[in-house]
Picture 1 (cartoon, rainbow, N blue to C red):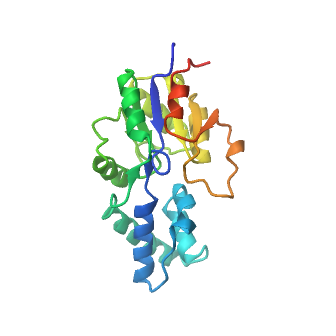
Picture 2 (cartoon, one colour):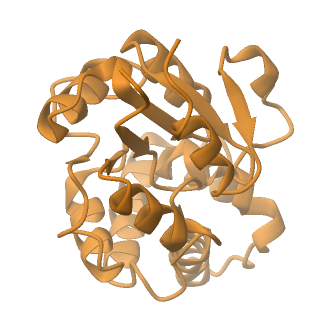
Length: 222
């Protein structure tokens, strides 16, 4: 094998800067309940932890179960209806994807975001016809950190797992990529809060800009 053949990406905080639309939905919900809005600085680095974490951040960890369930349903509805108002690809993403495609390789997405949110977002970002695979959190019977979504992505892309690079911004991303036999990289621009210790995740490295991924992509697998 002369080099890697496929780059797989996590979605939120790795491929796309989705925090703005998630904050928009969260603040709409807070406003509905006569609570003050949250600033981006309080929310950004927790986006990769999903809706449960955001709701606990906004309404506290000890809210009654019925209130939490109601708020989660409403939050997801608000987000789904405004899923790409502010979301954009991170800087350098478009150029990187073109470089991978021109090299004869392919790229795809593996996210824990459910398909009813992933699919419309990928459509709005005009990526659905270019991605070799899009694996959502409910595409397979397991989600990250289990390796099954990663292995399914490689299968759909027609590439051996060991010929794939996986880039993500959460510990579960690195664990899933490693368990699938992929080279796993941390997206240093991602949603990594101060309580996390990415240096302990077992990644092959950390990239601070999209184009750095090409340096890894063009290196023969060990």
